[in-house]
Length: 242
Ligand SMILES: Nc1ncnc2c1ncn2[C@@H]1O[C@H](COP(=O)(O)OP(=O)(O)OP(=O)(O)O)[C@@H](O)[C@H]1O
Ligand SMILES: [Mg+2]
Image: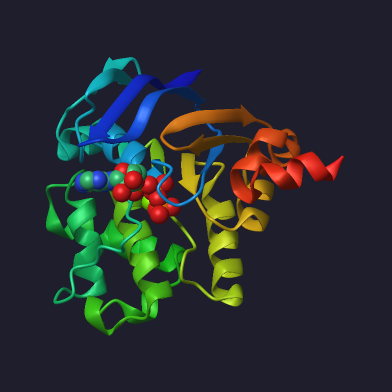
């Protein structure tokens, strides 16, 4: 079943075409990786799907409903949550309250929201840090807080923008294991610069270059696609490679 359909989404910032006629769909249960060089338009695409930017044109259909240009809280209520490339954690709130903010989207009762939060903190390995302030946490923990807050909104679909950026090898490995533990329960679309991380995790990969969708396919096909190699390394590597 198709859960998300993105149709011809276009977004310009002045003279920059951040997204140009981008279309793809995501089936329920899939993990789709979105890759592309810096400035390819990945974050802009996520911003539009999750309501933080309105597209200039194109449509976004989630679970059969047109959510194009809707507010982030409405899209979150529809079941689509995200994390941010530039990690967003309330610095003066405790870890607990940072995640309760998400849980309150679903549970008006604070006690119920807190109970749900404790379950999630345990799941992401932050149960011992529930009273720490957001600003006291290292990046890896702040990323987990973001993830827990997104999950606390009980989404059907999760967008993770640069899920492992800035983490060391060990932390990234732990983050991959954590992600794997959720993937059976939730549909995921993620960006990640490290191909060795993104490729084995993804059921399908979409490559954006200069705002346009260049290639879409199985990780194996995509990693050997000449157009992708050219986009990352330059044409001369492709020409001399064979
Ligand atoms: N709010 C904005 N105002 C003006 N230009 C923007 C804005 N947001 C993005 N851009 C431009 O749009 C293009 C796409 O940016 P975007 O951040 O979506 O790329 P990205 O693929 O997420 O890059 P990165 O890998 O560095 O995170 C870039 O040229 C960027 O400078
Ligand atoms: Mg980005």
